Image 1 (cartoon, rainbow, N blue to C red):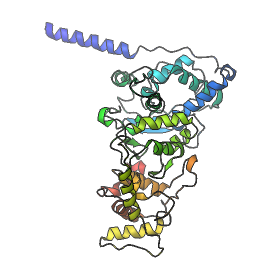
Image 2: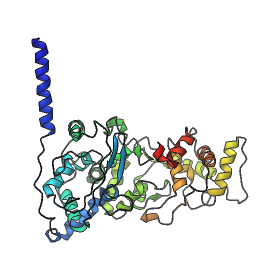
Image 3: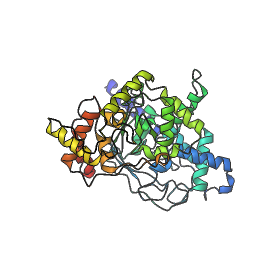
Image 4: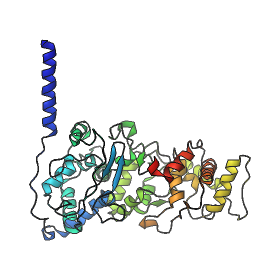
Length: 434
């Protein structure tokens, strides 16, 4: 009985201690009104605008056709749907009554002004690395230059027990390492600047790394090993990169600034708004990001690059208007005919786009990105306006689209055929049913 009683007492003490730890945050006194714009210097506001862009704050905090930063965007997660909050300086529905202290706590610890935990869909586990100066500048920019909007996002759709925010305290205990970025003394200043931006405000790993079963990024060999976002496959940035030609620092700079590189093609999907923000960043910062990411990539080899280019160019579509290759496989033949009808006008030898065989998209482990690009088209980033692509969602039947995927994968890669193409097509066509 004494042993059982001892276990009960220890359990109660542990429970009370855990509850006290989870409930340790108090409300921070609200401001009577947002700080006046005149209290911030122009230099701080300009820095804040750049750093808010580096963090892509408006991308997540703006719903489709909604006001910038007003929230309401639904974020589907394995644990339910989160509706992103309003962070305009509206005092009632936004953060206009938040002090700098409250804003810093949210950025560093994932706790709002009232003392409630924020779900880690808000990447405070990255933002905690940011310097006081950068956080203060973002706060100044939001308070002074973002238009206040009165709007309240819908309630989150989180089933029990994920709707209990106190549970996030356990997640934080396991995965949140608070504190500013500490430079690596063995690396260059440029590499460290890149690491600070990528790991901190840029939160690149939030999409480009796989997640474990409770939504935390995997580390070690899985760091930058690829992930998923908004129904797209997010490619690996490490040795698992699907790119047939190794990324060099210069190629990364091209891509990060403009969204296009001749050896890798053009960006699409969730990366496009990221590129639009990087397009207006300081050159030194973009070069630093490229330096850091390149350190995870396989080394570039000139001979290998030429070999990959030669193979890809050889596989490109013959520009002769009457050309249609002949295949014994009826699905391959149908795919070739569909390609001639909807793709070959641009995607042919000597055409403007990069050869399909050297793009990461057709070399990815599943067909989601090629399907989405085909169905939705490409609305290019501001640095590559002339590289758009129309959508074919209305003109392609499902069976023709599947045949096209079979042909593209077989013609332009040496990888195995994609599995489950019809299932991916149904999911993309009708996401609400999945």
